[in-house]
Length: 150
Image (tube, rainbow, N blue to C red; front, side, top):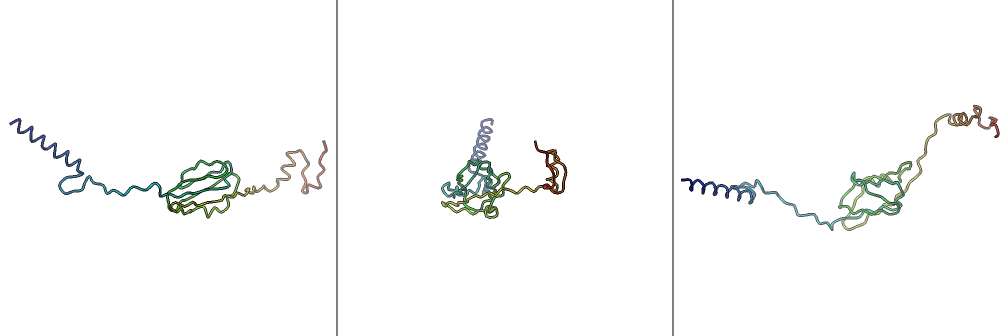
């Protein structure tokens, strides 16, 4: 009797293991996963940035790209990528053209970066404030003020 129970248990374990290994049991595809063909790693495009200056931050699809001055080349998947380029104190030229950059398979998309120094607005009365800091008398017209000579 014990031998029969032991054989039944062993048989039940073998069926359970077979079901797990085969990916399901009894007509259900429970353990099977629809597999997609693996992406071909050679199906990539290249994004090349020229005129990269020091302290330029390049971000592609929210990933920071390490940038050195000169030329930066990045291999990316084909499609449309969100590119953000910034540099403190400067305005990046053609920022709209960078926002959605299309990349084709086995092709190089080149982006020449240009930077314009950002204009810093000066506050009203900055001349008088600078004069007070320097110790000059306050005047409406800087040419009318008599500055002490050292």
